[in-house]
Image 1 (cartoon, helix red, strand yellow):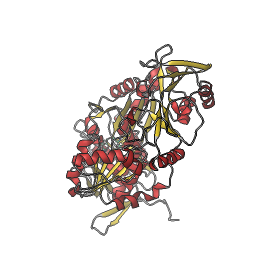
Image 2 (tube, rainbow, N blue to C red; image 1 turned 45 degrees about the horizontal axis):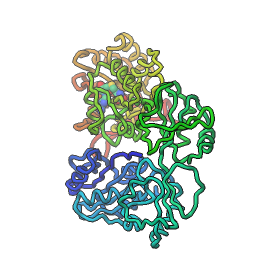
Image 3 (cartoon, protein in one colour; image 1 turned 180 degrees about the horizontal axis):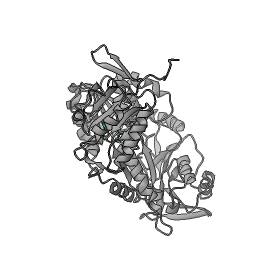
Image 4 (tube, rainbow, N blue to C red; image 1 turned 45 degrees about the vertical axis):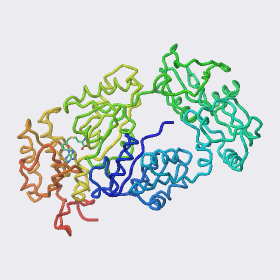
Amino acid sequence: MSRTAPAIVILGNGSLATARRIQQLYPDALIYGLAERVDGADRVYSDFGANLRQLYQLDTPIIALCAAGIVIRTLAPLLLEKGAEPPVLAVAEDASAVVPLLGGLSGVNDLARKIAAGLGISPAITTSGELRFGTCLLNPPSGYALGDLELGKRFVSDLLAGESVRIEGDAPWLASAQLAVSAQARLAIHVGSDERAPVADELRIYPRNVVARLNAVVSAQAIREALREAKLAWQSLACIVADDTLMADIQLHELAAEWEVPLRFVQAGDDVCAQPLTWRNPLSGVVLGVASAPLDPQRLGRARGRLSVIGLGPGAAELMVPAVKAALAQANDVLGYETYVRMAGPFRPEQVLHCTDNREEMQRARHAFELAAQGRSVVVVSSGDPGVFAMAAAVLEALHASSDPQWHSVELEILPGVSASLATAAQAGAPLGHDFCVMSLSDNLKPWSIIEKRLDLAGEADLALAFYNPISRSRPWQLGVALQIVARHRTPQTPVVLGRDIGRPGQTLRVTTLGDLTPDQVDMRTMVIIGSSTTCTFPRADGREWVYTPRWYGDKP
Ligand code: SAH
């Protein structure tokens, strides 16, 4: 399994130099810096504990430049949960020590050795087996799976007690290990995909060299039986390859999830891979292909493409939902208006950015499907929420208009974000605390007359109003007319909130009244919130004002 790039987490500018040296060893790694303490980090966080726990739960390797104790206490609540255990290391901020803490079976000592070598120090490796053999026998390289962990621990302690070992099968990574190898040894490391009963004096390592080729959906049990019939160990199954007509089949995806193997697709009649395979067909429906060495599923057929339409939130990284961060990390291609694509970065060099003009939404949506239909992971970026005057509806419109089965087979997901009206409202208090109405004042895609009508009716209904796209150079007069319509239904004292560039550098928040509001106070980067008849304000301790709309209406209950 290929791991995601590590996250380098720092608390202050004093660690930045060491962080950059480690980043040179892992060019894809991002430096996470504490907001207001670190200048020039790739990502900013405001809560150390929440950030660290989130990275851990996303299975991201963590290199924390701080005291080991802080990391241990922060992650302690997660350790009893079953789930991801990525490598976690503490590195002294002056680059004098590297301490592997967690993830012994996910390669933490390999990371520690690499970082130590890069920093010119010795890693603080404490795992006896690693020290003695120079490798973790229980963590074979990618493409191989360990048989039984508990038996394996016994096996390693027997070796540590001084026993010699035989190596059966092809284990190229053990060539440089410091093992006492002897043909007469009682203990054996057995590498192979043959099905055998587990025994205590054998460390079983399975090459993942078997592919199940399906042209119809079968049960998990059917695959198990086919493997048994062929005398192949289930642990050697590397991948399921199915006909591409089954790409969107939910049961097939559940099958692959149950087996915890990747699912790839080929056209009926096409070769599964370039490597020669020995085909075994013990049962109809499940054909097994066996290779002489581990198979890389990435090179078998192609993946089901994925298209994620994401919302970045207003701008600040801590207001971006974790699922959006994960989609961005996995993306092959990122499409969107250039400003938003830049906001979604930084990206790795191999990620392809397709920046387009803000107006080319349908073309962008179709381009996204073309890329995803080739099996790529594609992200379409919107600011705020993608479903609010943004790309999600354009993407669905493009799909609705298409009869291409490949487009309809793409795994399409819409991932929400914090919309500008909600981000602005939160900063002002709760102006949208009761019923409210969201409108775009842009008449690019709808007639102005319908906007006037809706404004009038929403005003009459005494809804609080949130205006997106309030004004632009090509629409200079519309906001003034809109405010006149609202004024028919509201007093001049009605509170108004103007949020500009909320969550972005240089954000401003202004509380005013409908009577004092003029269109020149507003531009296209502003969110306008106009209260209802019950919206009120009161002073904050810091001299500014809170704005809120009570939850009740009419007589206070
Ligand atoms: N999908 C976006 C809205 C796109 S429409 C969302 O959910 O937020 C663009 C309009 O949103 C802008 O004209 C402005 O009125 C508002 N807007 C977007 N980001 C904003 C921000 N950070 N601060 C204030 N207003 C913003």
